[in-house]
Amino acid sequence: HRNVTHHRRAWTGRDRDLFGAVIKSANMNREKTFSVYLLAISLLGMAFAFIVTFRYGPGLATDGARYLSTAENLINGKGFIEYLGVPLTQFPPVYSIIIAVIGWLTRADVFVIAQYLNILTFGMTIWLAGKFFRRLFPENVLYAYIGSGIIVTSVSLLRMASNILSDLMFLALTIYFLIVATDLIETPTRKNLFTLGLVCTVSPLLRYAGLTHILTAAL
Image 1 (cartoon, rainbow, N blue to C red):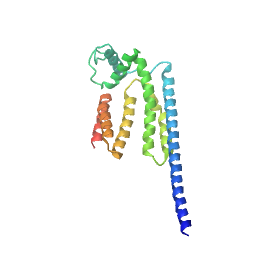
Image 2 (cartoon, rainbow, N blue to C red):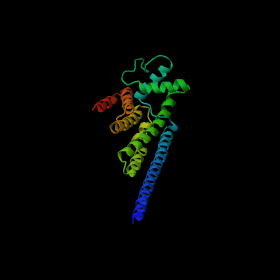
Image 3 (cartoon, rainbow, N blue to C red):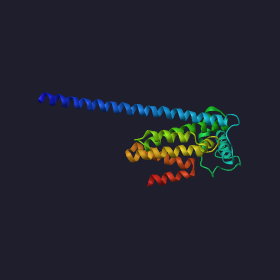
Image 4 (cartoon, rainbow, N blue to C red):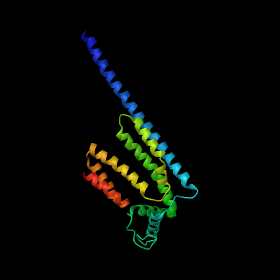
């Protein structure tokens, strides 16, 4: 009787370990599948943005012209001066700085740089949104699939990606802010605190609305 009880306990322990290993493997496969899905729809979104802007290029309004002219003047060593010949004060400088740095390194036209930067940013926005949805719905991955699908098929976001503005990049940064803030709440480490502080520093330099990130983090 003691031997039977001992074997039952042993097998129960083994079964529990085996069951745990199966669950862990299933979770890993599920996360891997979702990451592959995210990569696929991110590339699909980038393809959409490329098709929309391929023939005639991205849309360019007054705001975009100020960003590009400032970037061009930065490359030429003239400082933060827009096409009107006045300092860039109405808009934050980070978007122009990014375009200027890429232009200085590649010697490509700032208009083309902004076009492909928006395409890459659109893909990054889809990826970050998918990761955030996955964090929001840890028990139901289907919601993350649906949410990510809505982002990639959003006509409004595609319009953002097809115009030279900092809006789309700010949206991506906002989603990343939410992810980092969630990480800090769940795991209050110095690394997460530093990352959140860095995001809060960059945000208002990209869009003045980024000041709300600082206020939100302070709460």
